[in-house]
Image (cartoon, rainbow, N blue to C red; front, side, top):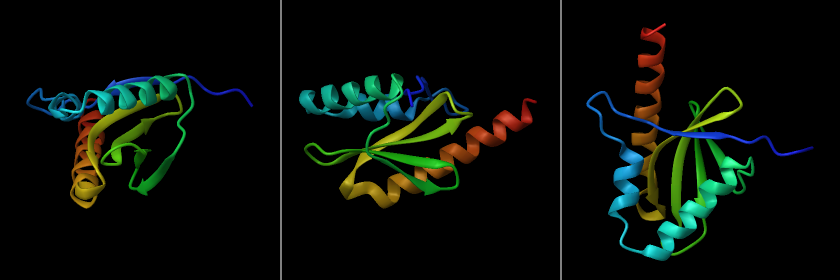
Length: 114
């Protein structure tokens, strides 16, 4: 079965902040940023690789490099990936809570606009 290309979007808070972009910009490790960008390019081509469902519509991409980075996302239909936030293994529990909060916010604002 062929991979299904995905469109990648970034979650924007109600006050215009983009948590995923802020997190990525805050990383000092250039090689880590490159690894994350490469991974997102593969996701864009339809290859999600090592990921898992965390429940409540939130998923985790696991990047086995350095601090074992995580990218949290929601899926809109089968073609759209909404990047929520990122983190690493040390902050995983807190990051999951934040990602779930962002996903709930996105869903409630989407439902309100329809």
